[in-house]
Image: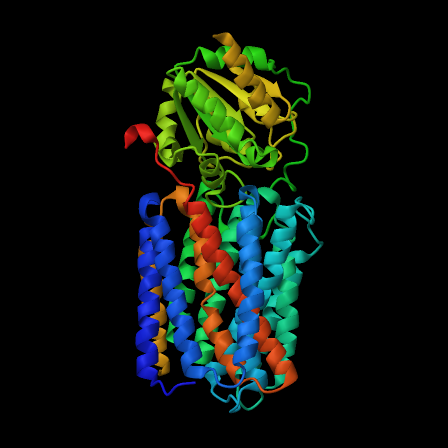
Length: 465
Length: 95
Protein backbone atom coordinates (compact mmCIF):
# COMPACT_ATOMS: atom_id res chain seq x y z
CA UNK A 1 0.00 0.00 0.00
CA UNK A 2 1.44 3.33 -1.09
CA UNK A 3 0.36 6.86 -0.26
CA UNK A 4 -1.36 7.71 -3.51
CA UNK A 5 -3.66 10.71 -3.55
CA UNK A 6 -7.06 10.16 -5.05
CA UNK A 7 -6.17 12.72 -7.74
CA UNK A 8 -3.27 10.57 -8.91
CA UNK A 9 -5.44 7.47 -8.68
CA UNK A 10 -8.14 9.09 -10.79
CA UNK A 11 -5.64 10.27 -13.40
CA UNK A 12 -4.61 6.66 -13.92
CA UNK A 13 -8.24 5.59 -14.04
CA UNK A 14 -8.81 8.26 -16.68
CA UNK A 15 -5.94 6.78 -18.66
CA UNK A 16 -7.50 3.30 -18.38
CA UNK A 17 -10.93 4.55 -19.40
CA UNK A 18 -9.41 6.40 -22.39
CA UNK A 19 -7.70 3.21 -23.52
CA UNK A 20 -11.03 1.36 -23.26
CA UNK A 21 -12.72 3.98 -25.43
CA UNK A 22 -9.93 4.02 -28.01
CA UNK A 23 -9.93 0.23 -27.96
CA UNK A 24 -13.65 0.09 -28.67
CA UNK A 25 -13.28 2.74 -31.37
CA UNK A 26 -10.72 0.54 -33.10
CA UNK A 27 -13.33 -2.21 -33.30
CA UNK A 28 -14.85 -0.13 -36.10
CA UNK A 29 -12.74 -2.12 -38.58
CA UNK A 30 -11.44 -5.69 -38.58
CA UNK A 31 -8.07 -4.29 -39.63
CA UNK A 32 -7.57 -2.31 -36.40
CA UNK A 33 -9.72 -4.37 -34.03
CA UNK A 34 -7.03 -6.65 -32.68
CA UNK A 35 -4.84 -3.73 -31.79
CA UNK A 36 -7.82 -2.06 -30.12
CA UNK A 37 -8.47 -5.09 -27.95
CA UNK A 38 -4.84 -5.05 -26.84
CA UNK A 39 -4.98 -1.35 -25.99
CA UNK A 40 -8.03 -2.03 -23.83
CA UNK A 41 -6.19 -4.83 -22.05
CA UNK A 42 -3.32 -2.44 -21.30
CA UNK A 43 -5.91 -0.06 -19.85
CA UNK A 44 -7.15 -2.87 -17.63
CA UNK A 45 -3.63 -3.66 -16.42
CA UNK A 46 -3.05 -0.02 -15.51
CA UNK A 47 -6.29 0.09 -13.50
CA UNK A 48 -5.42 -3.13 -11.67
CA UNK A 49 -1.89 -2.02 -10.78
CA UNK A 50 -2.86 1.42 -9.49
CA UNK A 51 -5.66 -0.13 -7.42
CA UNK A 52 -3.33 -2.65 -5.81
CA UNK A 53 -0.69 -0.01 -5.13
CA UNK A 54 -3.19 2.30 -3.49
CA UNK A 55 -5.43 -0.07 -1.56
CA UNK A 56 -3.85 -3.43 -0.96
CA UNK A 57 -2.24 -3.84 2.39
CA UNK A 58 -3.12 -6.97 4.30
CA UNK A 59 -4.66 -9.45 1.92
CA UNK A 60 -2.20 -9.19 -0.94
CA UNK A 61 -1.56 -12.94 -1.02
CA UNK A 62 -5.29 -13.68 -1.15
CA UNK A 63 -5.75 -11.30 -4.06
CA UNK A 64 -2.87 -12.95 -5.91
CA UNK A 65 -4.45 -16.35 -5.29
CA UNK A 66 -7.70 -14.95 -6.71
CA UNK A 67 -5.85 -13.67 -9.79
CA UNK A 68 -4.19 -17.01 -10.19
CA UNK A 69 -7.36 -19.11 -10.00
CA UNK A 70 -9.38 -16.70 -12.16
CA UNK A 71 -6.51 -16.29 -14.60
CA UNK A 72 -6.11 -20.03 -15.14
CA UNK A 73 -9.85 -20.51 -15.57
CA UNK A 74 -10.06 -17.57 -17.98
CA UNK A 75 -7.08 -18.85 -19.92
CA UNK A 76 -8.49 -22.35 -20.26
CA UNK A 77 -11.95 -21.11 -21.25
CA UNK A 78 -10.62 -18.69 -23.86
CA UNK A 79 -8.10 -21.13 -25.27
CA UNK A 80 -10.26 -24.22 -25.64
CA UNK A 81 -13.78 -22.97 -26.34
CA UNK A 82 -14.97 -23.81 -29.83
CA UNK A 83 -16.08 -20.97 -32.05
CA UNK A 84 -19.52 -22.56 -32.32
CA UNK A 85 -19.80 -22.35 -28.52
CA UNK A 86 -18.97 -18.63 -28.35
CA UNK A 87 -22.54 -17.67 -27.31
CA UNK A 88 -22.24 -19.99 -24.31
CA UNK A 89 -18.92 -18.44 -23.31
CA UNK A 90 -20.29 -14.91 -23.55
CA UNK A 91 -23.30 -16.00 -21.47
CA UNK A 92 -20.97 -17.35 -18.79
CA UNK A 93 -18.88 -14.17 -18.83
CA UNK A 94 -22.06 -12.13 -18.45
CA UNK A 95 -22.91 -14.24 -15.41
CA UNK A 96 -19.48 -13.72 -13.83
CA UNK A 97 -19.49 -9.98 -14.51
CA UNK A 98 -22.93 -9.56 -12.98
CA UNK A 99 -22.03 -11.84 -10.08
CA UNK A 100 -18.80 -9.96 -9.28
CA UNK A 101 -20.63 -6.62 -9.29
CA UNK A 102 -23.34 -7.95 -7.01
CA UNK A 103 -20.71 -9.39 -4.63
CA UNK A 104 -18.92 -6.05 -4.42
CA UNK A 105 -22.18 -4.27 -3.54
CA UNK A 106 -23.25 -6.97 -1.06
CA UNK A 107 -19.84 -6.90 0.61
CA UNK A 108 -19.98 -3.15 1.08
CA UNK A 109 -23.23 -3.32 3.00
CA UNK A 110 -22.20 -6.33 5.08
CA UNK A 111 -18.59 -5.52 5.93
CA UNK A 112 -17.79 -1.90 5.10
CA UNK A 113 -15.55 -0.36 7.81
CA UNK A 114 -17.83 2.64 8.30
CA UNK A 115 -21.53 1.79 8.33
CA UNK A 116 -23.20 3.01 5.16
CA UNK A 117 -25.86 5.57 5.85
CA UNK A 118 -26.17 7.67 2.70
CA UNK A 119 -29.41 7.13 0.81
CA UNK A 120 -27.71 7.28 -2.55
CA UNK A 121 -25.03 4.72 -1.65
CA UNK A 122 -27.69 2.41 -0.19
CA UNK A 123 -29.77 2.79 -3.34
CA UNK A 124 -26.68 2.02 -5.45
CA UNK A 125 -26.08 -1.10 -3.40
CA UNK A 126 -29.66 -2.21 -3.96
CA UNK A 127 -29.38 -1.46 -7.69
CA UNK A 128 -26.06 -3.27 -8.26
CA UNK A 129 -27.20 -6.23 -6.16
CA UNK A 130 -30.48 -6.63 -8.04
CA UNK A 131 -29.10 -6.20 -11.57
CA UNK A 132 -25.98 -8.24 -10.81
CA UNK A 133 -27.90 -11.13 -9.23
CA UNK A 134 -30.53 -11.43 -11.93
CA UNK A 135 -27.81 -11.24 -14.57
CA UNK A 136 -26.05 -14.07 -12.77
CA UNK A 137 -28.92 -16.57 -12.78
CA UNK A 138 -30.41 -15.35 -16.07
CA UNK A 139 -27.08 -15.84 -17.82
CA UNK A 140 -26.72 -19.35 -16.48
CA UNK A 141 -30.16 -20.26 -17.80
CA UNK A 142 -29.17 -18.70 -21.13
CA UNK A 143 -26.00 -20.78 -21.04
CA UNK A 144 -28.03 -23.92 -20.29
CA UNK A 145 -30.35 -23.24 -23.20
CA UNK A 146 -27.48 -22.56 -25.59
CA UNK A 147 -25.69 -25.66 -24.43
CA UNK A 148 -28.87 -27.73 -24.69
CA UNK A 149 -28.98 -28.57 -20.97
CA UNK A 150 -32.15 -26.51 -20.48
CA UNK A 151 -34.95 -26.95 -22.99
CA UNK A 152 -34.70 -24.45 -25.83
CA UNK A 153 -38.41 -24.47 -26.32
CA UNK A 154 -40.01 -21.56 -24.56
CA UNK A 155 -41.12 -22.80 -21.13
CA UNK A 156 -44.23 -20.91 -20.14
CA UNK A 157 -45.34 -20.99 -16.53
CA UNK A 158 -48.99 -20.25 -15.91
CA UNK A 159 -49.64 -16.69 -14.75
CA UNK A 160 -45.96 -15.95 -15.29
CA UNK A 161 -46.55 -12.32 -16.20
CA UNK A 162 -48.48 -11.75 -12.95
CA UNK A 163 -45.77 -13.54 -11.01
CA UNK A 164 -43.08 -11.42 -12.64
CA UNK A 165 -45.05 -8.26 -11.94
CA UNK A 166 -45.46 -9.16 -8.26
CA UNK A 167 -41.75 -9.98 -7.95
CA UNK A 168 -40.84 -6.73 -9.67
CA UNK A 169 -43.00 -4.71 -7.29
CA UNK A 170 -41.52 -6.58 -4.32
CA UNK A 171 -37.99 -5.85 -5.54
CA UNK A 172 -38.72 -2.16 -5.94
CA UNK A 173 -40.33 -2.02 -2.49
CA UNK A 174 -37.44 -3.73 -0.74
CA UNK A 175 -34.90 -1.67 -2.69
CA UNK A 176 -36.60 1.51 -1.53
CA UNK A 177 -36.78 0.18 2.04
CA UNK A 178 -33.07 -0.65 1.94
CA UNK A 179 -32.30 2.85 0.71
CA UNK A 180 -34.07 4.71 3.52
CA UNK A 181 -31.44 5.03 6.27
CA UNK A 182 -33.96 4.96 9.17
CA UNK A 183 -35.52 1.63 8.28
CA UNK A 184 -32.67 0.11 6.28
CA UNK A 185 -31.76 -3.40 7.34
CA UNK A 186 -29.36 -6.03 6.14
CA UNK A 187 -32.30 -8.42 5.92
CA UNK A 188 -33.75 -6.38 3.08
CA UNK A 189 -30.52 -7.05 1.20
CA UNK A 190 -30.85 -10.80 1.67
CA UNK A 191 -34.44 -10.67 0.46
CA UNK A 192 -33.37 -8.63 -2.57
CA UNK A 193 -30.65 -11.14 -3.42
CA UNK A 194 -33.15 -14.02 -3.25
CA UNK A 195 -35.84 -12.27 -5.27
CA UNK A 196 -33.39 -11.11 -7.96
CA UNK A 197 -31.90 -14.57 -8.38
CA UNK A 198 -35.43 -15.92 -8.93
CA UNK A 199 -36.36 -13.14 -11.36
CA UNK A 200 -33.23 -13.88 -13.38
CA UNK A 201 -34.40 -17.46 -13.79
CA UNK A 202 -37.97 -16.49 -14.59
CA UNK A 203 -37.17 -13.91 -17.27
CA UNK A 204 -34.93 -16.20 -19.31
CA UNK A 205 -36.77 -19.53 -18.89
CA UNK A 206 -39.67 -18.57 -21.22
CA UNK A 207 -37.40 -17.37 -24.02
CA UNK A 208 -36.85 -19.71 -26.95
CA UNK A 209 -33.65 -20.69 -28.73
CA UNK A 210 -33.81 -18.37 -31.71
CA UNK A 211 -34.45 -15.36 -29.48
CA UNK A 212 -31.17 -16.01 -27.66
CA UNK A 213 -29.24 -13.30 -29.55
CA UNK A 214 -31.52 -10.73 -27.92
CA UNK A 215 -31.18 -12.25 -24.45
CA UNK A 216 -27.41 -12.61 -24.61
CA UNK A 217 -27.07 -9.00 -25.78
CA UNK A 218 -29.42 -7.76 -23.08
CA UNK A 219 -27.62 -9.66 -20.31
CA UNK A 220 -24.34 -8.29 -21.68
CA UNK A 221 -25.76 -4.84 -21.17
CA UNK A 222 -26.97 -5.70 -17.64
CA UNK A 223 -23.54 -6.96 -16.62
CA UNK A 224 -22.14 -3.56 -17.61
CA UNK A 225 -24.87 -1.63 -15.86
CA UNK A 226 -24.33 -3.69 -12.70
CA UNK A 227 -20.64 -2.75 -12.89
CA UNK A 228 -21.55 0.93 -13.15
CA UNK A 229 -23.80 0.43 -10.11
CA UNK A 230 -20.86 -1.04 -8.20
CA UNK A 231 -18.92 2.09 -9.25
CA UNK A 232 -21.52 4.28 -7.55
CA UNK A 233 -21.27 2.11 -4.44
CA UNK A 234 -17.49 2.53 -4.26
CA UNK A 235 -17.38 6.11 -5.61
CA UNK A 236 -15.14 4.83 -8.35
CA UNK A 237 -15.24 6.66 -11.69
CA UNK A 238 -13.46 4.00 -13.80
CA UNK A 239 -16.11 1.45 -12.87
CA UNK A 240 -18.85 3.88 -13.82
CA UNK A 241 -17.27 4.77 -17.19
CA UNK A 242 -16.49 1.19 -18.19
CA UNK A 243 -19.78 -0.14 -16.91
CA UNK A 244 -21.74 2.39 -18.91
CA UNK A 245 -19.70 1.72 -22.06
CA UNK A 246 -20.61 -1.96 -21.80
CA UNK A 247 -24.19 -1.13 -20.86
CA UNK A 248 -24.54 1.06 -23.96
CA UNK A 249 -22.93 -1.59 -26.14
CA UNK A 250 -25.32 -4.31 -24.98
CA UNK A 251 -28.34 -2.06 -25.41
CA UNK A 252 -27.35 -1.10 -28.96
CA UNK A 253 -26.87 -4.77 -29.89
CA UNK A 254 -30.20 -5.63 -28.29
CA UNK A 255 -31.91 -2.99 -30.39
CA UNK A 256 -30.21 -4.17 -33.59
CA UNK A 257 -31.37 -7.73 -32.86
CA UNK A 258 -34.97 -6.84 -32.08
CA UNK A 259 -35.13 -4.61 -35.17
CA UNK A 260 -33.85 -7.50 -37.27
CA UNK A 261 -36.74 -9.60 -35.97
CA UNK A 262 -39.26 -6.79 -36.29
CA UNK A 263 -40.24 -7.29 -32.68
CA UNK A 264 -40.16 -5.13 -29.61
CA UNK A 265 -37.96 -5.98 -26.66
CA UNK A 266 -41.11 -6.45 -24.58
CA UNK A 267 -42.42 -8.94 -27.11
CA UNK A 268 -39.21 -11.00 -26.93
CA UNK A 269 -38.99 -10.85 -23.14
CA UNK A 270 -42.61 -11.76 -22.57
CA UNK A 271 -41.85 -14.72 -24.76
CA UNK A 272 -44.21 -16.88 -26.66
CA UNK A 273 -43.54 -16.64 -30.39
CA UNK A 274 -44.13 -20.00 -31.94
CA UNK A 275 -46.16 -21.10 -28.95
CA UNK A 276 -49.46 -19.29 -28.96
CA UNK A 277 -49.76 -19.18 -32.70
CA UNK A 278 -47.14 -21.50 -34.05
CA UNK A 279 -47.51 -25.17 -33.25
CA UNK A 280 -50.03 -25.96 -35.93
CA UNK A 281 -50.48 -23.29 -38.53
CA UNK A 282 -54.00 -23.34 -39.84
CA UNK A 283 -54.37 -24.15 -43.48
CA UNK A 284 -50.88 -25.52 -43.93
CA UNK A 285 -50.89 -28.95 -45.45
CA UNK A 286 -48.29 -31.26 -43.92
CA UNK A 287 -47.62 -33.09 -47.14
CA UNK A 288 -47.15 -30.30 -49.63
CA UNK A 289 -44.76 -31.42 -52.33
CA UNK A 290 -41.19 -30.16 -52.36
CA UNK A 291 -38.51 -30.93 -54.90
CA UNK A 292 -35.57 -32.74 -53.45
CA UNK A 293 -32.29 -33.63 -55.11
CA UNK A 294 -29.10 -35.48 -54.31
CA UNK A 295 -25.59 -34.11 -53.97
CA UNK A 296 -24.78 -35.01 -57.55
CA UNK A 297 -27.62 -32.88 -58.97
CA UNK A 298 -26.79 -30.10 -56.53
CA UNK A 299 -23.15 -30.18 -57.64
CA UNK A 300 -24.33 -29.94 -61.24
CA UNK A 301 -26.32 -26.77 -60.50
CA UNK A 302 -23.49 -25.22 -58.47
CA UNK A 303 -20.74 -26.27 -60.85
CA UNK A 304 -22.29 -24.39 -63.75
CA UNK A 305 -23.38 -21.29 -61.82
CA UNK A 306 -21.62 -18.00 -62.42
CA UNK A 307 -22.65 -16.49 -59.13
CA UNK A 308 -23.46 -18.17 -55.83
CA UNK A 309 -24.59 -16.74 -52.51
CA UNK A 310 -24.33 -18.89 -49.38
CA UNK A 311 -26.90 -18.18 -46.68
CA UNK A 312 -25.68 -19.69 -43.40
CA UNK A 313 -27.84 -20.05 -40.29
CA UNK A 314 -27.73 -21.76 -36.93
CA UNK A 315 -27.75 -25.16 -38.66
CA UNK A 316 -24.26 -24.41 -39.96
CA UNK A 317 -23.04 -24.05 -36.38
CA UNK A 318 -24.86 -27.19 -35.26
CA UNK A 319 -23.33 -29.21 -38.09
CA UNK A 320 -19.91 -27.55 -37.53
CA UNK A 321 -19.72 -27.23 -41.30
CA UNK A 322 -17.91 -23.90 -41.55
CA UNK A 323 -14.66 -25.40 -42.85
CA UNK A 324 -16.48 -27.52 -45.43
CA UNK A 325 -18.43 -24.53 -46.73
CA UNK A 326 -15.20 -22.59 -47.18
CA UNK A 327 -13.65 -25.49 -49.05
CA UNK A 328 -16.64 -25.63 -51.37
CA UNK A 329 -16.56 -21.86 -51.84
CA UNK A 330 -12.85 -21.93 -52.68
CA UNK A 331 -13.41 -24.68 -55.21
CA UNK A 332 -16.13 -22.63 -56.87
CA UNK A 333 -13.96 -19.50 -56.80
CA UNK A 334 -11.15 -21.40 -58.50
CA UNK A 335 -13.59 -22.23 -61.26
CA UNK A 336 -14.31 -18.51 -61.67
CA UNK A 337 -17.60 -18.43 -59.81
CA UNK A 338 -18.48 -15.26 -57.93
CA UNK A 339 -19.10 -16.35 -54.31
CA UNK A 340 -20.56 -14.31 -51.47
CA UNK A 341 -22.15 -14.96 -48.10
CA UNK A 342 -25.38 -13.37 -46.90
CA UNK A 343 -25.51 -12.92 -43.14
CA UNK A 344 -28.77 -12.05 -41.43
CA UNK A 345 -28.29 -10.10 -38.17
CA UNK A 346 -30.07 -12.81 -36.13
CA UNK A 347 -28.53 -15.81 -37.90
CA UNK A 348 -27.05 -18.02 -35.19
CA UNK A 349 -27.35 -17.64 -31.45
CA UNK A 350 -25.64 -14.33 -30.83
CA UNK A 351 -24.87 -11.15 -32.75
CA UNK A 352 -22.11 -11.85 -35.27
CA UNK A 353 -22.07 -15.61 -34.58
CA UNK A 354 -21.90 -16.61 -38.27
CA UNK A 355 -19.16 -14.08 -39.01
CA UNK A 356 -16.89 -15.55 -36.35
CA UNK A 357 -17.55 -19.11 -37.48
CA UNK A 358 -16.73 -18.29 -41.07
CA UNK A 359 -13.71 -16.24 -40.06
CA UNK A 360 -12.47 -19.34 -38.23
CA UNK A 361 -12.73 -21.25 -41.50
CA UNK A 362 -10.65 -18.53 -43.22
CA UNK A 363 -13.52 -16.98 -45.15
CA UNK A 364 -12.36 -13.39 -45.83
CA UNK A 365 -14.60 -10.95 -43.95
CA UNK A 366 -15.19 -8.79 -47.01
CA UNK A 367 -17.11 -11.67 -48.61
CA UNK A 368 -19.61 -11.62 -45.76
CA UNK A 369 -22.43 -9.25 -46.64
CA UNK A 370 -25.15 -8.08 -44.34
CA UNK A 371 -28.82 -7.76 -45.15
CA UNK A 372 -28.77 -4.31 -46.77
CA UNK A 373 -25.70 -4.99 -48.85
CA UNK A 374 -26.76 -8.32 -50.26
CA UNK A 375 -30.50 -8.12 -50.76
CA UNK A 376 -30.33 -6.25 -54.05
CA UNK A 377 -27.94 -8.89 -55.41
CA UNK A 378 -30.13 -11.97 -55.14
CA UNK A 379 -32.02 -11.32 -58.39
CA UNK A 380 -28.69 -11.18 -60.22
CA UNK A 381 -27.52 -14.44 -58.65
CA UNK A 382 -27.68 -17.88 -60.24
CA UNK A 383 -27.84 -20.02 -57.10
CA UNK A 384 -28.54 -19.24 -53.47
CA UNK A 385 -27.48 -22.03 -51.10
CA UNK A 386 -29.28 -21.94 -47.75
CA UNK A 387 -27.37 -23.83 -45.06
CA UNK A 388 -29.35 -24.32 -41.89
CA UNK A 389 -31.22 -21.02 -42.05
CA UNK A 390 -35.00 -20.96 -42.05
CA UNK A 391 -37.17 -18.12 -40.77
CA UNK A 392 -34.79 -15.41 -42.01
CA UNK A 393 -35.36 -16.59 -45.59
CA UNK A 394 -39.15 -16.99 -45.45
CA UNK A 395 -40.81 -14.80 -48.09
CA UNK A 396 -44.09 -14.81 -46.16
CA UNK A 397 -42.46 -12.21 -43.91
CA UNK A 398 -42.81 -9.81 -46.85
CA UNK A 399 -46.24 -10.80 -48.10
CA UNK A 400 -48.49 -12.47 -45.54
CA UNK A 401 -49.64 -10.00 -42.91
CA UNK A 402 -51.18 -12.82 -40.85
CA UNK A 403 -47.83 -14.56 -40.41
CA UNK A 404 -46.16 -14.28 -36.99
CA UNK A 405 -42.97 -13.19 -38.70
CA UNK A 406 -44.67 -10.64 -40.98
CA UNK A 407 -42.57 -7.50 -41.36
CA UNK A 408 -39.33 -9.12 -40.25
CA UNK A 409 -36.55 -8.06 -42.61
CA UNK A 410 -35.51 -11.19 -44.51
CA UNK A 411 -32.86 -12.21 -46.98
CA UNK A 412 -34.52 -12.22 -50.40
CA UNK A 413 -33.28 -15.70 -51.22
CA UNK A 414 -36.45 -16.40 -53.23
CA UNK A 415 -35.33 -13.85 -55.83
CA UNK A 416 -32.26 -15.82 -56.85
CA UNK A 417 -32.60 -17.73 -60.13
CA UNK A 418 -32.47 -21.03 -58.27
CA UNK A 419 -32.25 -22.05 -54.65
CA UNK A 420 -30.71 -25.06 -52.91
CA UNK A 421 -31.76 -25.58 -49.31
CA UNK A 422 -29.63 -27.82 -47.08
CA UNK A 423 -31.78 -29.09 -44.26
CA UNK A 424 -32.12 -32.07 -41.99
CA UNK A 425 -35.86 -32.46 -42.38
CA UNK A 426 -38.97 -30.52 -43.24
CA UNK A 427 -39.43 -29.37 -39.61
CA UNK A 428 -40.52 -25.77 -39.41
CA UNK A 429 -38.24 -23.10 -38.02
CA UNK A 430 -38.28 -21.59 -34.58
CA UNK A 431 -41.29 -19.40 -35.30
CA UNK A 432 -43.29 -22.53 -36.15
CA UNK A 433 -44.13 -21.12 -39.56
CA UNK A 434 -43.85 -23.06 -42.77
CA UNK A 435 -41.24 -21.57 -45.06
CA UNK A 436 -42.82 -20.82 -48.44
CA UNK A 437 -39.34 -20.71 -49.92
CA UNK A 438 -39.15 -24.50 -49.75
CA UNK A 439 -42.20 -24.92 -51.96
CA UNK A 440 -41.13 -22.65 -54.80
CA UNK A 441 -40.64 -24.06 -58.26
CA UNK A 442 -37.01 -22.89 -58.29
CA UNK A 443 -36.18 -24.43 -54.91
CA UNK A 444 -34.48 -27.79 -54.45
CA UNK A 445 -34.15 -29.41 -51.07
CA UNK A 446 -30.98 -31.31 -50.22
CA UNK A 447 -31.85 -33.31 -47.12
CA UNK A 448 -29.26 -34.55 -44.66
CA UNK A 449 -26.49 -33.35 -42.38
CA UNK A 450 -25.10 -30.07 -43.72
CA UNK A 451 -21.51 -31.17 -43.32
CA UNK A 452 -22.03 -34.39 -45.27
CA UNK A 453 -24.05 -32.61 -47.95
CA UNK A 454 -21.42 -29.93 -48.48
CA UNK A 455 -18.60 -32.47 -48.56
CA UNK A 456 -20.62 -34.50 -51.05
CA UNK A 457 -21.15 -31.52 -53.32
CA UNK A 458 -17.49 -30.59 -53.14
CA UNK A 459 -16.51 -34.10 -54.18
CA UNK A 460 -18.99 -34.17 -57.06
CA UNK A 461 -17.90 -30.78 -58.34
CA UNK A 462 -14.27 -31.94 -58.37
CA UNK A 463 -15.43 -34.92 -60.45
CA UNK A 464 -17.17 -32.67 -62.96
CA UNK A 465 -13.86 -31.63 -64.50
CA UNK B 1 -15.86 12.21 -5.82
CA UNK B 2 -19.14 13.91 -5.16
CA UNK B 3 -22.37 12.46 -6.36
CA UNK B 4 -23.11 14.98 -9.08
CA UNK B 5 -19.68 14.50 -10.70
CA UNK B 6 -20.28 10.74 -10.76
CA UNK B 7 -23.67 11.20 -12.38
CA UNK B 8 -22.18 13.53 -14.99
CA UNK B 9 -19.47 10.95 -15.72
CA UNK B 10 -22.14 8.25 -16.02
CA UNK B 11 -24.29 10.23 -18.46
CA UNK B 12 -21.38 11.32 -20.65
CA UNK B 13 -20.00 7.77 -20.77
CA UNK B 14 -23.33 6.49 -22.03
CA UNK B 15 -23.19 9.03 -24.87
CA UNK B 16 -19.61 8.10 -25.73
CA UNK B 17 -20.52 4.42 -25.60
CA UNK B 18 -23.43 4.99 -27.95
CA UNK B 19 -21.33 6.94 -30.46
CA UNK B 20 -18.42 4.51 -30.43
CA UNK B 21 -20.39 1.27 -30.47
CA UNK B 22 -22.75 2.24 -33.30
CA UNK B 23 -19.65 2.37 -35.54
CA UNK B 24 -18.79 -1.29 -34.94
CA UNK B 25 -19.74 -3.30 -38.05
CA UNK B 26 -22.04 -6.34 -37.69
CA UNK B 27 -19.20 -8.68 -38.64
CA UNK B 28 -17.45 -7.78 -35.37
CA UNK B 29 -20.44 -8.00 -33.07
CA UNK B 30 -19.31 -11.23 -31.39
CA UNK B 31 -15.80 -9.92 -30.61
CA UNK B 32 -17.50 -6.71 -29.45
CA UNK B 33 -19.51 -8.70 -26.93
CA UNK B 34 -16.60 -10.75 -25.64
CA UNK B 35 -14.40 -7.63 -25.59
CA UNK B 36 -16.98 -5.72 -23.62
CA UNK B 37 -17.19 -8.72 -21.28
CA UNK B 38 -13.51 -8.14 -20.63
CA UNK B 39 -14.07 -4.42 -20.08
CA UNK B 40 -16.93 -5.09 -17.67
CA UNK B 41 -14.34 -7.15 -15.81
CA UNK B 42 -13.18 -3.70 -14.60
CA UNK B 43 -15.23 -4.57 -11.56
CA UNK B 44 -11.98 -6.33 -10.64
CA UNK B 45 -10.95 -2.91 -9.33
CA UNK B 46 -13.88 -2.99 -6.92
CA UNK B 47 -13.11 -6.58 -5.99
CA UNK B 48 -9.48 -5.69 -5.20
CA UNK B 49 -10.60 -2.77 -3.04
CA UNK B 50 -13.00 -4.88 -0.97
CA UNK B 51 -10.56 -7.79 -0.73
CA UNK B 52 -7.92 -5.37 0.58
CA UNK B 53 -10.27 -4.37 3.41
CA UNK B 54 -11.52 -7.82 4.33
CA UNK B 55 -10.46 -9.08 7.74
CA UNK B 56 -12.73 -12.00 8.61
CA UNK B 57 -13.01 -15.44 7.08
CA UNK B 58 -16.38 -14.98 5.41
CA UNK B 59 -15.60 -11.47 4.17
CA UNK B 60 -12.30 -12.66 2.74
CA UNK B 61 -13.95 -15.58 0.96
CA UNK B 62 -16.67 -13.33 -0.44
CA UNK B 63 -14.24 -10.72 -1.72
CA UNK B 64 -11.70 -13.18 -3.12
CA UNK B 65 -14.56 -14.92 -4.90
CA UNK B 66 -15.40 -11.57 -6.49
CA UNK B 67 -11.73 -11.23 -7.53
CA UNK B 68 -11.84 -14.69 -9.13
CA UNK B 69 -15.02 -14.00 -11.10
CA UNK B 70 -13.75 -10.65 -12.34
CA UNK B 71 -10.34 -12.09 -13.26
CA UNK B 72 -11.99 -14.81 -15.34
CA UNK B 73 -13.81 -12.08 -17.26
CA UNK B 74 -10.72 -9.96 -17.76
CA UNK B 75 -8.32 -12.71 -18.77
CA UNK B 76 -10.83 -14.86 -20.63
CA UNK B 77 -12.54 -11.91 -22.29
CA UNK B 78 -9.44 -10.25 -23.68
CA UNK B 79 -7.82 -13.52 -24.73
CA UNK B 80 -10.81 -15.01 -26.50
CA UNK B 81 -11.42 -11.70 -28.26
CA UNK B 82 -7.82 -11.68 -29.42
CA UNK B 83 -8.16 -15.26 -30.59
CA UNK B 84 -11.24 -14.37 -32.62
CA UNK B 85 -9.88 -11.16 -34.09
CA UNK B 86 -6.74 -12.96 -35.24
CA UNK B 87 -8.99 -15.02 -37.54
CA UNK B 88 -10.54 -12.10 -39.42
CA UNK B 89 -8.75 -11.79 -42.71
CA UNK B 90 -9.37 -9.79 -45.84
CA UNK B 91 -9.46 -11.60 -49.16
CA UNK B 92 -6.04 -11.70 -50.76
CA UNK B 93 -7.09 -10.63 -54.22
CA UNK B 94 -8.31 -7.28 -52.96
CA UNK B 95 -5.19 -6.33 -51.04
